[in-house]
Image (cartoon, rainbow, N blue to C red; front, top):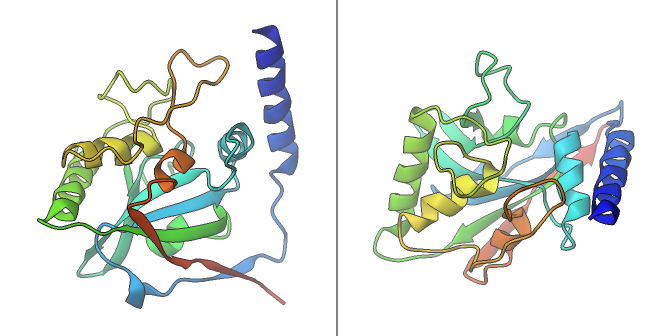
Length: 208
């Protein structure tokens, strides 16, 4: 156990040291014409928590996930994330960000759009459930406990939304991390579902 904790702390320290963005920044290119309601978006974040997830996950793909919705004013991403509370009056609650903000340079270094192709309105049910989580202003789950549905973390939000349509996107994949009391879901546990197909990768073009 002590070895596991030591490894976890080393990952945390390494994550903090890596959390320094390029001063020149990037232009983020998002092809909104290819988006559909209910698409899943994955990103590798810049924050310390994102780096810890990335290095703790052997798959090392992405550290965060959200679900795309559209309204009359454009495309948005509903997601649960710690630390990003400037748009939510200081509360760490389920958010609805413009997709360009979700993939903003200060928040992401890479990203991809994935789609769950389904029939019989399953995606509509999922979108409805995610919107419910948003309107309920559910708090972020800092304990990462799947047994407590009153608070949610990013992958749990998506997992529970699809469960409402009787679909387990994780296919029961879980991970154990030192210091956490329960097994957790990594973004890769969802990304590995073969029912998801890649629509396109988000382009991050360095500024001159």
